[in-house]
Length: 71
Image 1 (spheres, rainbow, N blue to C red):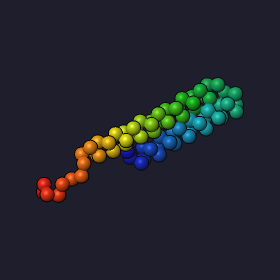
Image 2: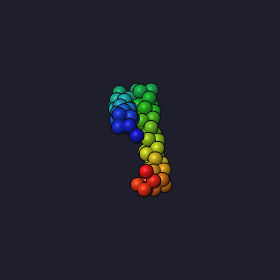
Image 3: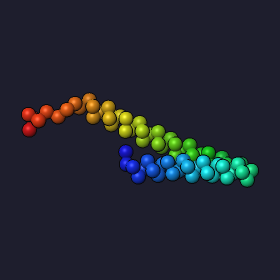
Image 4: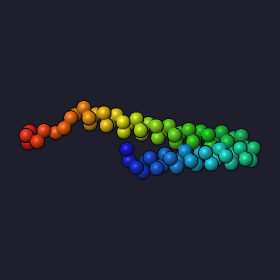
């Protein structure tokens, strides 16, 4: 998966955690809930990217080594 997407997804998770912490510190339940949602969204995107990467690896391994005599 694109490293930019991974970094962006991680940043979204961290931003959400910070927002949730700010909401908790200020006793703003709405901000806290929004932050938790953002963090979960970022984390789920990362998980989805990891699954895609794993499946690509499985697909590539099933193809096997390329036989140079076929050229």
